[in-house]
Length: 397
Image 1: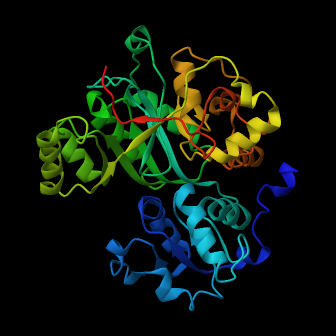
Image 2: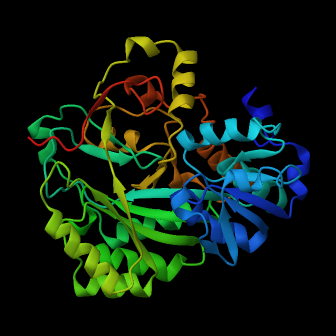
């Protein structure tokens, strides 16, 4: 069943599309729109946020749904948003008689199917790499990876103090080697996000960015550094970010941790030096749980598969010459909290770049791993609607 559905979710006329409407112009769209504009005519850009209506991208104005709902009936619409926002937009489009995967579809499905069927290319929306586990602030709930939307962040629940002592750190050679293997099976990634811990605590950050950009700038849409905004970038890092067209994403916790002045200094530094950035204000975190045993509700394999689909994480991670469907697998195994099984990650060193290897990578990224699920999903509460465990942001120890 999986094989039939894989790369066959869209109606056949999507293969011949040359013009699209982009619905959503937030973070997901911004990191992908340049690639889309290279290969397709963007007829319109639509967004539900009134604050960005009227803004322009390549002379294409961002419009509201009400303005365009009578003009998009015969057009193909690519929804470039988080999974949470997609559900709302899907209902909007269905309300005017449009059908999912016939008239509109998710961005990741469109990119996967169109580029593979038309060019035999693996084009991904995003990939994350962690370069350090060090944090300049210790939280009561220690976060390890970001969710697909701006309001939630994934967390471990009650990590013991001794677990926080075993920090890891990667240098430029480590990360560059990861990409050497990665780009054997991936042709293009719209954005590469560098995270921690706090990545600015890694003294090799500037060198990591420079070396990866130098070798693979044609294969990476843009590079993004995710920081909590407590550390001022030094002169070397500023220069590297300017040269390599790096963006910053600042996670704002000032409503619970008093560092407003430092965050403002970081923002002013970025603005003065022409470094683009965006802000993420998190109101709550998901408690994912830290368990070595299977959560009782997910003992059945079919239930784990459904649980994984509901989570719908897009946080694919590249570290240790392995590609992880979700950063949870990497982080938990790194801390010795779980033992990963065959099929839980792709061992990139074993990939030769064959069509079969590329197809495996594409299947994996689209949520079709060999077993149909990732084993860590059975020990994780996830970030879908079936997890109601939330905690206050950045509760300090």
